[in-house]
Length: 275
Length: 52
Image (cartoon, rainbow over the protein chains, first blue to last red):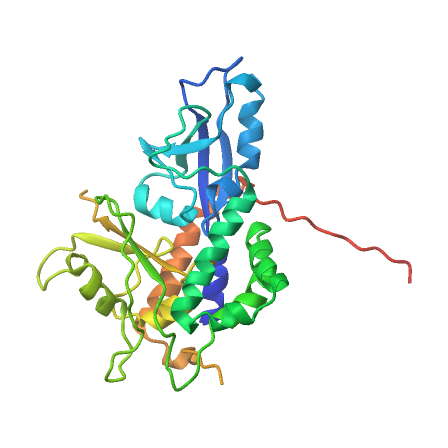
């Protein structure tokens, strides 16, 4: 039988097979072949696509190359969401590999943040970790760490080093026995059919009576439509890292084991596909 | 003293079993047929050779 520690590895080493194709409107000197990659679910698009950029630049003139951005079936992909979240939200239940269109012009400023360098991704990643720790431990753990410890978290993600990352991240996952969990659970709930980027509110892992809150308790409060009524067909899938945990799963356990490296539990609510 | 919700396998609850199973299925679905694809992040391997 698997151990809870194995879940951390499975989450970290999750990959999405992806086929990158160049947008047809780009000006090229010869035809651009598609480029295939296994993308880490827990990383960010702009952090892991140097090879994609290099590949397509071979067929383009430098003057035709603006900032690279990605699109899936008409939706610009937000690099500041983890790759796995983008896939689960926009493309789960589709045939693999995931086909992403690459653009080098007409950057959609209204939809996407600019990402001129990896330091922008690092700043975004670290600010998410700090926000999560403010919710979990009133920032006590992250503030007790040194600059080099923060760097270790980032370098672990950037270089896909599980052990390096978790040697430090385990401190962000601790809590005292008497508390029974974090102060609040850092979570974000994403939905496709909404102008709202995501739902994020304060929610405790344990009820005032001392009972462990479950995924069901969270959804009842944040997104009740995601819980099917008795005898009713399931209208939504509640997806975390490409799987659908049972609604009775304790929220504290989910936060410790299925959070992304940014320390947030990213939950996608997608309409159940009608076959 | 840090605490964890980890339990012995004998006590494995349905929700936990279901997560393990689904993660295995995810690996089959998303990785096993695509192992010939290039990894986005190269793992540099350092081999240290010594004569002692």
